[in-house]
Each structure stands twice: as C-alpha cells, then as structure tokens.
Length: 414
Image (cartoon, rainbow, N blue to C red; front, side, top):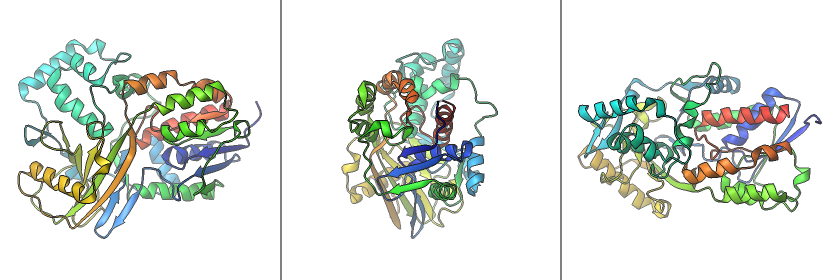
C-alpha cells in the first residue's frame, strides 16, 4: 500500500476535529485539509457569551477519560471538576423531585429481579431498552429510572430505543488503562475546547476551508477521505459521486434512513433564590412537564454566572414539533415547568438564550441498530473512504474522541 501523504476531512464538528487531531498525533507529516460549509467550527458544540454569563449550545460537559485529559493538556485547556453542590441529581416523579423515584419495596424487587437474571443481562439483538429493562428490573425501574435517564441523555423513546446500542459497550473488552472518571468541563465552556483545538491544529499544519459548499464529483480523486458530517448530510454527499459505485450508493441509502431528533435548549438566568439545588432534574413522561430535563449550571460549574443559571431541554422523540415554537412560547413552557418543579410561581428571568436544532441527535432506536449492522464500512475503508459521527454508536465527546482514534489507526495502518 502506498504511504498516505494527504487526507481530506469533510466537516469541522467534533468528529472532524478529533480525526484531524489523531492524524497529526500519529503522523504529523500527513497533509490534512478540513472542509466546513459553515463559517465556524464545532458543529453542535459551542458556547455563547451572554450579558449574564455563559450558555452552552449543546453539551455542558464531557466524560473525563485519559484520552480527553491528554488532548486538553496538548491544546492548553483547563478542565473543571463539578462543584460539591452538583452531587445531588433528581428524578421528577409523582409531582416531586426525588433523589430516587422508587420506594424501598420497589427498589428491593428491582434488585432481586436483576440478581436472578444477572447471567442474562447482556442486551439481545433487536431488543428495545424497554424490553431489556422489563426483563432485568421490572416495569417501575424501567419507567422511572432507565427510561427517564435515557430520555434525558438520548432524547429517545425507550420503547423503540436499542438496548444493544445503549448498553452493549459495557459488555465489550475494556480499553487498557481506560476508566470512567466523572464529568468535567473546560474552564471557559465547551466552546473553549473547540477554539483551542482549532488553534492547535492550525499550528500543526491543518488547513481549514470554511464557508465553502462541499461537493465530491469524483470519488477516485478524494481518497483517503473522512466524512464527518451528520448522517443526513453524509447521505447527500454520497449521492453526489458520479462514480460512487454500488457500495457507496448503499451507504447513502442507509444513512438517509437514520432518524435525527430535534432539540431546543433554553438557558435562563434568575436572581438567586430558594430553588432546588444540585446537578439537575430529569422528568418522566406523563408528569405534567414538557421539558426532558433541566441543568442547574451555576450549581455545577464555576465561571458560569453570578446569577442562577438553568438550562432547560425540550424536544426529542415525544415532542418532534418543538423547533416550530417561537421564543415567547419556549419561555412560557420553561416558566410553567419551573413552577411545577419548585411548587411555587417562577420568578421572571433576567435573560433567556434559546438554541434550536431541527436535527440534533440521532435516535438510537432499533432502526439505527439495523442500519449500523448493514453499513458496508469495512469494504469502503479498504478503498480509502471513512465515515465518522455521533450516529455510529457513541454520542458523548469523549466517546467520539475514542472512536476517532480507532478510525485513524485503521486508516494509517492500512
């Protein structure tokens, strides 16, 4: 195989930036060009400076792994540990925020059921999260804890979400010296990670092409190529190749079928008061609350706001029309849910920063499980075409960083 001299990357979101990072870490002599149709990098990730503090456009933290720690050190980003007040996390159930939404008898039943089924805990092919939870823990644990938690993280419907995609990685061989070490955040917000990484990449010779429409008219002249866009965008790009071939056409058709869920985040700033304190609260469905969850930013991180900062999250599989709501309607929803949470009329916010994403997060459902099972990735990678993104089994930044390293290793090792 001829040595790689040049790599093109489509997309300057986290997946594309991480791929460029690993190429330069392992093979600094390789020329790397990153194409991005928007004017700024980061994709979904970014931090907005408001008059009252920082507001995240998407994730407000990341899993602290050895790989992420090394990357942050390389690019000069300090990572904050959560404040002591962030230890408290709540589930909203039966009109009340609770640290644990099951009583003693319900908890004992779920525990004993799990012990009895321990040997069968690995998710089965085409098994939903709901089916997996019922099989191992029973209905109450599945509805109030597992379903609620995964709705808050993945925004999906547990009755169609894939147990294998969500929990399967816990049954894979552990990465050497890798272990979960909690959640951290860049000192100046998630946008600092993106901005500092772009600066580092430019210093190491990566060329960025921002604000230019990306077209791939001749696939044979674009290898090796890493497509790091959303599944929807990747599908469109695949369809542009006049000499794409049957496997790329198949890839395009499969990626077109990936469902992506809408999300609206509203970060609101209030005068400090006797409000619920902690990391945040997740809301079970059918509890009279429209939000999926709320994060109490000023209780989680330093350097966020002198006021009380809360990020309310709406949308997902049960609220697909959310992005059509106007700003006033979003604020009204927020205040109504806040009143329900605190059991008292909500104060008016000093400021609200709203971010809408029509296509924010892949629905990790059985359909995606089947799509990933049928993607012709290994054959395409032999010919120099790679894809990377949050629809391939991991949504957190630390997991995407890990997957990006594996992809780059496969590419440079042939």
